[in-house]
Length: 165
Image (tube, rainbow, N blue to C red; front, top):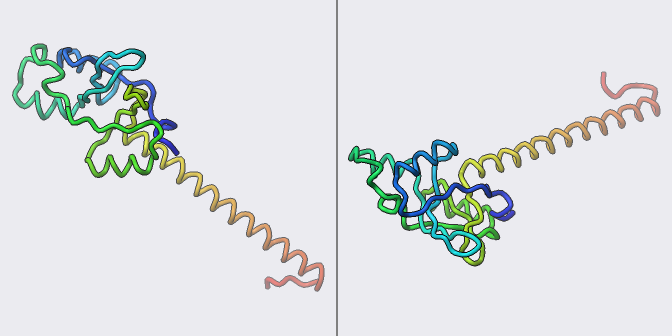
């Protein structure tokens, strides 16, 4: 399965020269834990960084600075880790684990922003997969029980006695 199949395509973005205060308002209004910082470029914006709720707490609030005077590009994570929409989900999960990150912007072959993949998306996918496995096991058990009952009925018909006493 590819990253592009499960990523969220509704990405909340901001520009690097916006204030942290504006970014916080955007995050609150959209109920998200991050904004992808982009440069405008043609059809799809190019991601250049990410500003997370953790960045704000650790880099800004500890100094209790005036959030309207601090620009997003002053506190965003510049070493942006991205995934191509055709990348494998398992490989991307390993990348996220290795880098210690919870969110990865998803890009197209031109580097344009296409979506965002969060740990929450992966947990939801894995939960669905585990549910499918549980259902499979349940069906197999029911099928085996039904087959066992059929064999028991055949034995009763053949011998006139139940094999189960």
